[in-house]
Length: 375
Image (cartoon, rainbow, N blue to C red; front, side):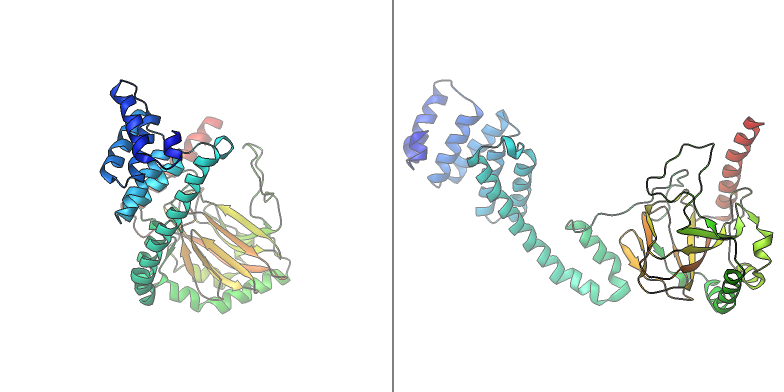
């Protein structure tokens, strides 16, 4: 070992090879031979010794660094990147790492960063730049590149109670695909006037989330029974809230054009949603993935925002959007004024009429069963 440390690789190689020839073989000896071969510029000998060491000790970070170095010197940067990463993944806790091994791992990290940055720059300056220049047409390929290079992680549907398979994983839907949206947007002024009238007449806004005595309590963000996020319902759990609907006849009329789901005891739910100044709706996911949630913005102060997955937007008065609420989403009002939107739900367009009927029956059956058991 001293010969290797003193930069006498030929002498070290001969000594370690003699040990192996005499029947003494372990991963450390093969690593010493690999280092000697490296210092003698014997690439094939180094590669062979590294492989023999890994065969005896598959989680040897030094061996992976040396293997990565070999590929790096051969300009096989994809392979080098993979082995530098492997070395870092199998490395022991830094508290238990010797100084010389830590130096090797630090060098591996530097090389790994160099290679991945070069790769990212190539993709970003090439394909992603061209994709971004195409606007909406290149939006998905741009997002896929961000996933590919690890800049972002994808979000997926995570419904809390019911998952319907094979539906697309889309954060926001294109409102231009829904012919009724323009009619609802055209009614914005009338809807806003009715909202303002309801507010002036002390409309019954109640906390959007309320505690239920017959369910375990889980409220880590303190939103249950919190007036910061409140609702004025026009439809609740499939029933018209007559008192509130009477104050908003034009809004109720405009909603007739919207394909609201009709599930006894469940849907539709339509409400004016209020978010107080400084209030935040923390990241969360909805209950079922067979619906989309719609927003019609009505009173939108500055510094209000909304995020679904990686897509962050600001509301614009009178402009509807539709999103999948089973994908992680959040909202905030950093202004000094209340924010108001009309919130509603529709079926996801991918569900056939038959599927919608069956989903409705399924969800109603769940409620019927539990109601029957209680009685």
